[in-house]
Length: 236
Image (cartoon, rainbow, N blue to C red; front, side, top):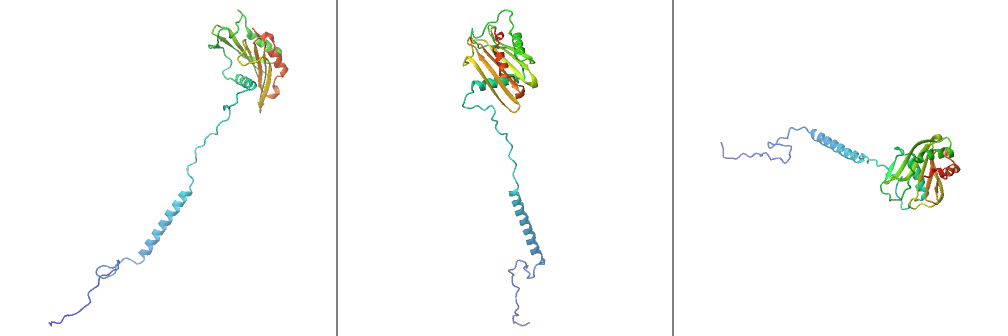
């Protein structure tokens, strides 16, 4: 053995991540890296497409709300006497509860007219209807009295041809506040429902209203309603 040194090249540490410290390259297949990149790319594309579709998908529909009704909405203008009379005729004609007797608890003494003992105005009202409007049949009658049993109002409903409904009201003196003596009449209607009335306010305080609602073709004439409200047998 001699004292000479034998020189050789020492293995260099590789800077490549796919090589082991032995200096040999990793056994990982070279096709794996492109495959991973392809899979990652496809996943990214799928995520983007999902987000775009989610952004275009319509959200939940807003709950439907009924349009505000304009019927019965209060206005700044008060109802005229004619409008009030027409509305009253319609309400009473189609009242599902029918006519009924009531007591006016808030009436003052002397507001209503005393009824003579044994007097019954309802048959007289029915007879007056038959005279003015032959063929009408009485459905029901009603009374309104005060706390002292004085008779304030008598009402009647009758039906005629084609479903027309007649409403008759007799109000004893003193006349209601705001009621003017004299004749008043009016008519109004839309579609198949038409309403007409005649009101007579007498000089001695009686108020008689007769009106009908139903098809226009079967409405009683103005002359017939006028005859009815001016029948003196309606008073007590």
